[in-house]
Image 1 (spheres, rainbow, N blue to C red):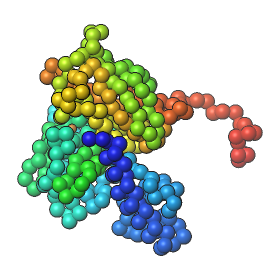
Image 2 (cartoon, rainbow, N blue to C red):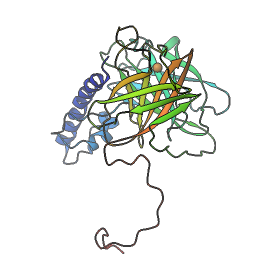
Image 3 (cartoon, protein in one colour):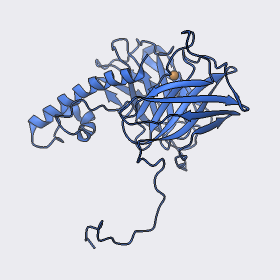
Image 4 (cartoon, protein in one colour):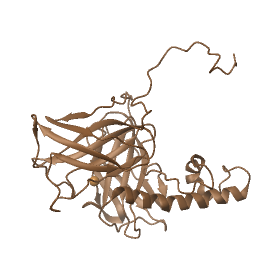
Amino acid sequence: MNTPLKLSLFGLGLAAVFAASYGAGYLAGPSPATAPAGHQSTSHATHDTAGPQNSTAEVPGGLQVAQDGYRLQPLSTQLSTAQPQPLRFRILGPDGAPVTAYTPTHDKDLHLIVVRRDLAGFQHVHPTLGAGGVWEIPLHAGAGPGQYRLFADFQPTARSQGLTLGVDLPAPGAYQPAPLPAAARTATIDGYTVTLDGDLVPGTSSKLTLTVTKDGKPVTDLQPYLAAYGHLVALRDGDLAYLHVHPDGEPGDGRTTAGPQIVFHAEVPSAGAYRLFLDFQHNGVVRTAAFTAAAGTAAPAAPAPPSPTPAPSPTHGHGGH
Ligand SMILES: [Cu+2]
């Protein structure tokens, strides 16, 4: 499955929705902010588009709790930082009823990504679908207290494309935000070293090669995990826009090796910093290697540190003092 293509198709559908929304608002009054009530959930995105001419603008996944008639409805109000507690939610369809029929993508009807809003504590898990369209999984807020983002990545049978909806849930307690780790080409996890080659170029399918080694030796017996040798989730620093990228080639296709390299083609929507999470399986254990990567030439990987107030500049000042 070609994920950039999937994203593009997804974007086209969205663009049509936004174009319709914008057009309605445009006709209703001089301000694009006066979108009709039925389109309020998309009005923020509408503001970010350049106008009626920019009808092909794509909105990344995961930024909305409702889209194309579907809604992610949490049935839990918070996450636990102590013992895992059942997390429950539903996907409501355009008719308002819970969705119970899904088309599996990569072996699962629904992929749930959980991460604290500072991009710490990433989890990629697979809840169980129960009666009444209720999804459930025991979950623990692994990074400690704070606000968490949940992404449900799924495809209802009634749709020809997947959808990623997002919602926030708090893990109560004293939040100690972690700074975004600096951009790096290597990540280590449980004795494995994963090296990232390639650069993210905004708006273009960018080839990323991830190489897995253990104790200095290439790992050549990666195990298929959810029908692939690796799964890559990219989250944009700042708003947690979501991309789920699958590798080039599949286990058993006669050309894809079981490591040490896993090749992805990722298309990020803008310059900026992204946190990349690679799930891979070896010796029966799924592990996640995380990287910070900067997309675009001028994008810093981390926010600028606090600096003293600059001296008033005749060039940049607005003369307001
Ligand atoms: Cu998954």
